Image (cartoon, rainbow, N blue to C red):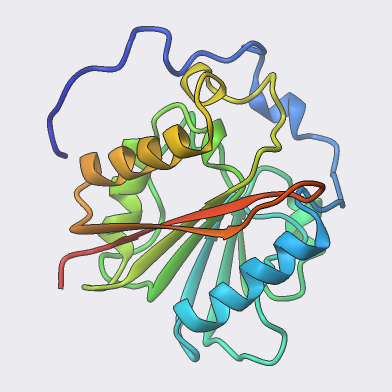
Length: 208
């Protein structure tokens, strides 16, 4: 993992320090970005995620925002609530796991063609460790797509995330990816404007 300046001691503290499993115990079958942002993300996935590939949808829910007309070999869903994952028809495998307690992913090296983290990166307290695991399970040159908006559960978002604007958050995600060993990072603003949910994606790629 790449070295660099240390984060402040309380950078990854959360206002609600209670067990995350309690917070996520009740299923939330809602979307966390508006329809326009969902449409923009779906179209981005269409061009970025390999058709026929194995996808890892980390911190997923009852919907993965994948294009309905594109077939994938398998979509593996990870999340904190079994009912939400069971309601997601795109998932072939489902894993309930708290990444803030155990960042290790139960997959072999180079077994995944692409990964996604949709509007959830702000909840990770060991993001570089989790993303290093993502890098391990991705094939060479494969992407991870990390999307975020200006919405979150503020009591569960880490302090450093809540202190930054969208541009700062994009730089922070790029730093996470760099420290996790990703070879290349790119940021794209998919949607912005008054009266709508903005949407930013940061893409990291493993070494080819």
